[in-house]
Length: 212
Image (cartoon, rainbow, N blue to C red; front, side, top):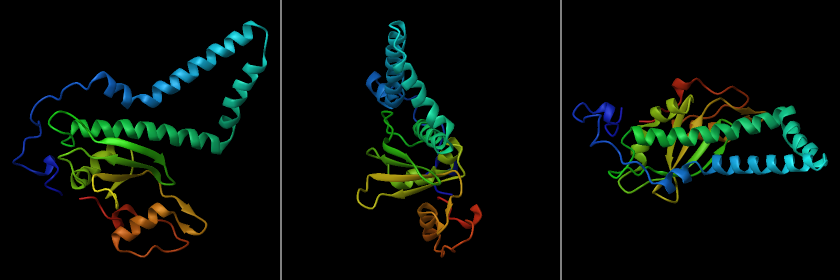
């Protein structure tokens, strides 16, 4: 247990210094930028397709339905859509964890999620920290991040080049390849000081390192 997590410090109140300030409108729009752009694109395409149907032109409507139905009919397409939705969900859940815990500044500013992308085991988030927050603070709340993202675990590592940036690996499943373990699980083995066996399933969670 890390003393940086207020839950592990019996002498630090959990309530914090007081209620956080409501973020500005531009900040809220930035946090929901992907959903706003996606909704705008869907609305624009729907309006154009409806206008084409009124004029008796069926080709735009057929092209739209084909674009949506072809990925939905294949397993790889559904997996890709599901992984992108998981990225959106994890981004908002990580932001919520920062607001509900001590991973924010006194003015209520939370770390900035620069990029979040799908991986074979889950998602990988690159987060830039604010002044007053370090990688140890994020690592101390790895269990909260994993629970908020509905994941098996969350592994926090400091970026090798930028000290104010951390990489959060959200592990949802054990992914293997014909040649052995995936690159994500190879790194987990290296952190534990173990040798990754070839041609075997990943070990149980209790054999992997736990974030302090």
